[in-house]
Image (tube, rainbow, N blue to C red; front, side, top):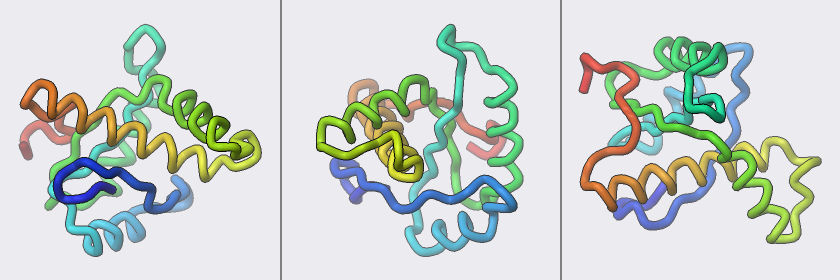
Length: 132
């Protein structure tokens, strides 16, 4: 999540993908009332969408409420960035997967906000193109 001005990003929580994250996602969206949801899309290092990206798109489309705009952004290297930040802060990132996921989510949001500030356009693309 971030503050209203999009300057300070912070982790909220790690939601397991299984068995079904929809109820928890809906609760967080109701609590935080976001302007939009930024979702990391796992692309290959070459930039293509593989099986993992398809799974993310499918799960997000069914798990996220339709009333909030969702944008997918490239998350390549976000875990590497998060791990380096945690190690730099003295945390043992290898033993704390949930912490790495949260730090990666912060890195993804920071990148999306930086792109929007630099270009004047939202980062990524709509998950549901007909909704935006």
